[in-house]
Length: 246
Image (cartoon, rainbow, N blue to C red):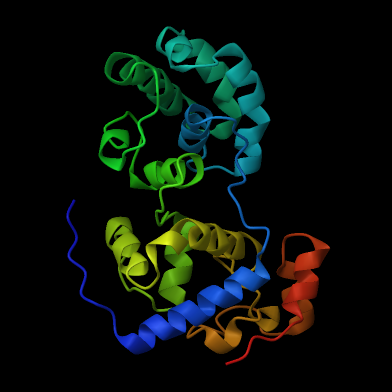
């Protein structure tokens, strides 16, 4: 899909980058939270992460990779055995079929190796642009904007985009920042979405980004109650008490 994106207004770029810098200070520990040791393991783990948590995925991938360590092992796997190993992640039948299909495709077309190219990655079973950008960014160092549910929700709250189309969102957000920042920006937004700016009730009352956020106040505004909504380490709660300059 080719997306044409107009150059964003300078004021929007400045506001977005200021918020991006604030995110960097607020979430210095942002990273991919999936456990992996290779591009192949990250690819499999990211496919499994759909509609579940990274914690749940990490709980199954140790045994999964011990049993099926590479693409050939998945290509030759009994799909029912794969289903049993990944059952806790949900949608296990569809995911198992994708994993076996990925193994076969990698063996047949890429000598068992994960390609470091978005166009090739998205041809693999169960792999879309979101998964491809995760793999490219964290396994190959190729910058990409990963538009998961957290990123989509937050960038619309910040009015960086109005679109519900993940591909359009990816390109519109990417236009606001230097390419080299895309991967870490995605991680920081995801951390903020998981820990502070929740879908149902954001912790607005303790969010240092409130002064930069057009949607500030849509969540819990009382600081005491808002702090109870925050997920994450105590160090995050300490950082939440530090204001961000307007």
